[in-house]
Length: 395
Ligand code: 3PG
Image 1 (cartoon, rainbow, N blue to C red):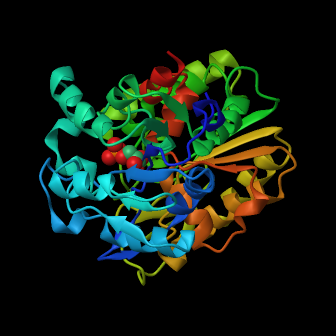
Image 2: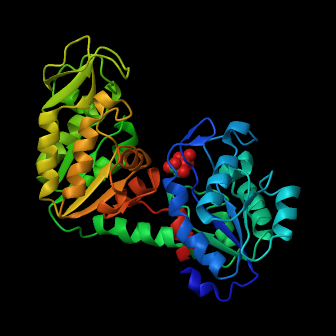
Image 3: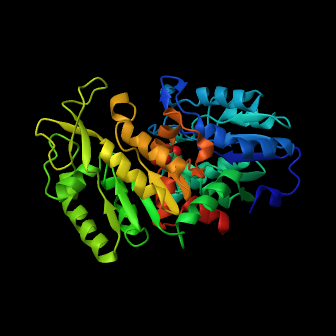
């Protein structure tokens, strides 16, 4: 159900779940992509005359207030982007939240403090989550779910509250599902997936699933060394998940059996240590010296990956190719971002880190068909899993 189905919202209190889990350096937001992605829904509600109450989390506090996870920097940035004051409640559903919600006026925005300061938010116990959801529901007349990045979590402010209030999905949730669904079901082929990031273990489910769906799988990032090890290569001091080597050997066999092309880098940028100014050299992927670690895919691999992306009709990219935050190890991620930007096919950038890389490295977001705000959520969607925060809206 879209926001329009909620009827006349003038003067009504609408609780919105957004995903404002943004990267911070102290109290400075280093990438405000998730806040900007929330604006269409918030603006639509404000234009409709609603009193908007937003709930969100930041980081993983342990169920009690921790100043470093306060949403204060988000309230400030959101206010700048909306061009109006955003009130911040000192608590989540306590006295301050209740008072501010009660006196909220049409067109005003109230952000509740980090909902994960309340341990009930992430509780496995349905009754505990329900108790928090009851308190959230008392603050508003309607609920709009718009935090796509968190819809894979069965949490009080995502799932349980939707069972307690008339609800709708926000524009971001619709847009994400609309775009991501082009890569599930029946994608236009060739369908290429570029996977990076540090851990194979984080991506086990998605890799297994992609081996039945994608035509080609391009692997880079820290996880590639477990693939290279599975092929019998020495990986020096690179990141290696020894306990995943057997699983990866299984993937390589499955890929062959299913006719899925696995594209691995042919060269690697190595350095003696994980440091921005460590001396970088390029070596063949099967000749990583014992005392060096791989920190990026090499230039030949960048060209190879770009070719494999260029003629694909659907391309999904999740996870950086190297340590893009350090200039010397950012070329592989840049090569993939550039190839995605130039590709004629439908291009989706998924995952918090690759989306941040696109922006931090100065690429034009509009040149990609879709940049997902979801990390785990977009991966789980691509895996074909049921996302509780979406399923509850469909019930
Ligand atoms: C994310 O950053 O992927 C979402 O905000 C979810 O955060 P979580 O993994 O801490 O639940």
